[in-house]
Amino acid sequence: MTDNTWPTVDTELIDDVTLYSAKLIIPVTGPVIIDGAVAIHGDRVVHVGKRRWVLKALKQEMTAHGTIHERHWDGVLTPGLINAHTHLQYSGMVQVGQGTYDRFRAWELAFNEVYAEAQKTQPWKQWAEDGARQMVESGTTAAADIVTDLDAAGALASQGMHGIAYWEVMGWHNAEWMEKGRTELIRQLRRMNEEQLPNLGISPHAPYTLESEPFVDLPDIARQLNMRLHIHLAETPLEAGTYPPVLTTYSAADWSDHDWESYRQLKEVGKGASAIQFVDQLGSLGPDVHIAHGVWANGEDRRILRQRGVGVALCPRSNRITNTGKDAPVREYLEEGNLVSVGTDSLSSTPTLDLLDDDGTRRNFLRQQLFQHPGGLRRDDGADAVAVNNADDNLLFGGKVRLFPVHVPDSVQLLLQQLLKRLTGKCNFLHYCPPSFV
Image (cartoon, rainbow, N blue to C red; front, top):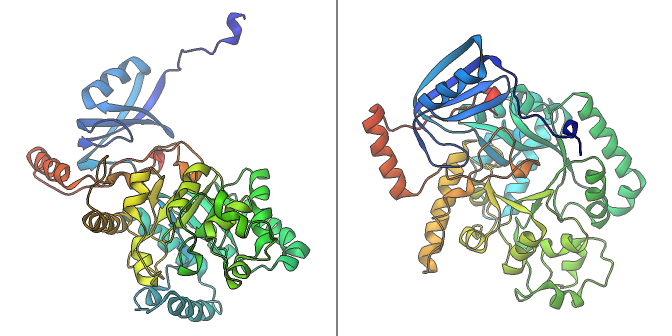
């Protein structure tokens, strides 16, 4: 091997750096930093560390006439949050989210009524961009946004956010899908691509709105296009399994040999497979997939998700408002080692798009479940479910996965607030999310 084949370790000198400093910085990985700084050159994070160390390092890396522009934040700097499941185009449907429903179907009917009325004026672009603005204002800088109407596809880009716009596929029967569904999907994705959106994905809606053929085809199409998939799964009681939570290998003999037209058909004849087990048999799950909700996932379902490398976006407030019948098994997900993150869902099913409001609800669920099932977690208290954007994007969006305790355990939070009060005289947290940092 010649010397020419080895990459050079020399770096070009830089001439312009923006330095964001604060009394306290919470990095993506590693301990908190007191009197820290984040140095950014162009769209790249150059250094994160003690302010004095960062300045010393920059002196060796900058040109003689290089300039450092410093902006000091009187609070705590954290990477931007990632909303793992939302529908920004429904941000104008607040009245639906403010309702009270005795079952999921009742919420669904209320949603359909308002959606049908909105179709007359199609305010999707305005509503979606307003939702994206609300996210940025509450510290979210990337999202998995499901798009049902093309006008809403540019919401994330309109606010300089990262993430993926997932085109939603729903309402297709097998014969119709095979006749024109694939062609229609490619046409829609091509139109979205012409808008020069940063990242696109595909969202097969759910096993109760799509028959089997789309669930077989869509993973292949997505992988050919190097796109991720995002599925609503185990959200409703209809999707719960009734078999004992043993390996699907033992229960599948009762149902897997039949070519089911749909999951609904399987359930109508009394088979007990869960929706997760059903789409897994169709080959729809893999590490390029994350699901939304996962409320009705039993032990075997959670094992399948772990084995396939599928993450779960928990939407605790939305599940309460739409009345999915129970809360997500947060304790089990964390104890068993499933990859979890948090999403707000849309304003048609949640009061705000502030991700930390949902994470607070998730933590409350966890406390209740720990009380009901003594023994506790053997890790932290599950505070690591909020994903933060580390300039590489999050695993759920196809980049490097990092989960970090932005919402710290109560005991640590109290100590952190006392420390922050001594340093700055304030106890509020500022979520820092400049476009160049994400």
